[in-house]
Length: 442
Image 1: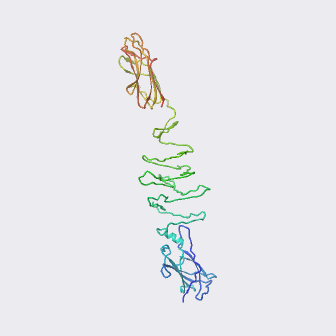
Image 2: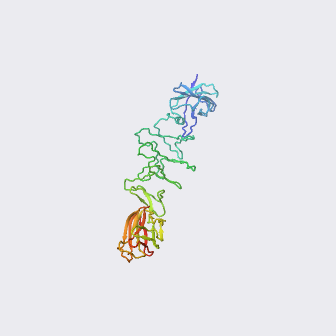
Image 3: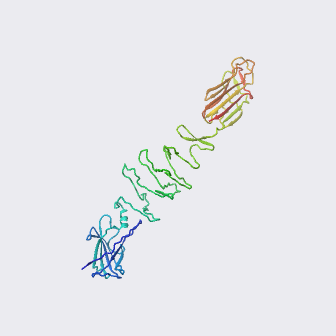
């Protein structure tokens, strides 16, 4: 008659690692049919794992030949013996009850005469965790605590070459505003990090990102990456040689925006600032248009000047307007803007200008009548006129002068014209005729 095996203890190996071993520990005290301890002897043991009940289906079995100690105790690892049927890996520990049946041959063979069955009241946790990693077998909500120092409590590695993620967290409800993934660090003695993302930098033109935030949909509210803080940094970036925080926008988007609705600052910069692609240059200042768009402008009004002193015997016909294009002694700065063929001066930059001209004639008048005039034309229209007294036969014209202070735009054309009503032909003098243009300010 078979006698029941007396169970001393049943122990399971709790493995905290990404790769759980396919075995767990088991101990039992071995007695013979007379209930005497079998000590310091090799015994034959058959272990079977039954499903649902103590007479249920065998899902795994193996044999071992352990040696008892002075107390009749054997210590074995189920899963390390000679497999008779099934596999440990094939057991789904989460979806049923399981029992261990042990059969013993005190002589060390396979003539098993002692049997005992006991229920597994605790699942082999490492094996359960390994199986449940494949899908719905993991029961939620789940909470765990790890207090071991210098140990990563949870790790998932994706070694595939595809684009699949190592892990995904999602709030699938349209009204759930809680984070899909939340990280918290309560350190007060160092720079604690709630969530850290790392990526390798590249030199092949590809872009890597330690953390990437994406806002989907067509709405205008939301943030790909959002930082919030009471007193410290909402978003913090640190870099030795690269760019700490980078924003990119194409089309009409904005790469970065800062807003303060209180009494603080929307942006506080400690260190140099560089603005690119908005007309930067040496000595310029940042200015704004009416809508707040900033550009670099010259800090000091540039020196724009033209002066010409006759030294010409240009003939001035009577009764008609004559364009003066014979200014010979020039001082010109700010570019070559005077056309000596047409007599036109092209305004180089928009600003407020002062234009002056004076004329004098070589010969006296031959008849009484109209006086002489000097005129400033802008884009073909009279802008200012200066005139002499009426002509007196045998007398010289008095000098005529004109001045115009006016805002002119870049590209406008300026001409000096002369009209006289005395001799049929009269000539300008070189010492009394001149023409100047100066930029006063932008």
